[in-house]
Length: 131
Image (tube, rainbow, N blue to C red; front, side):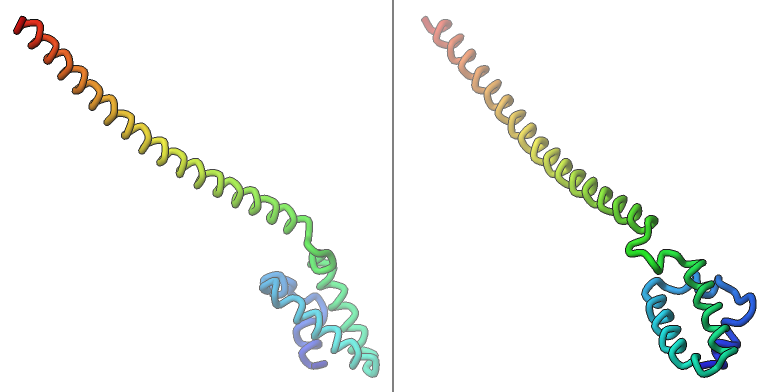
């Protein structure tokens, strides 16, 4: 483990590799560093390397120390708003579909009433013409 620490986390190591890790992998990395820290107390150079690397990881990934991070809070809030708006949109679409059905039924009733009115008018004319 000391070799891994020396090889990957010594000097001015590349933080982009850690920044590219999936958020689910970062706790495992920190746990590995924690276990490594307990073993490094017997290796003075390893202990200093461990502390330096751990400090840089935390410094460049402050979201690891706060749950959830401010960016994540904003994202969660926006995702919640999007979900609410999607539900509202789905409800509005259902209402539009219902109203369209009601409108179609109302038009059918109007057409039926017009035909009935025409029949009554023609029957009335026939009765008046028959007298």
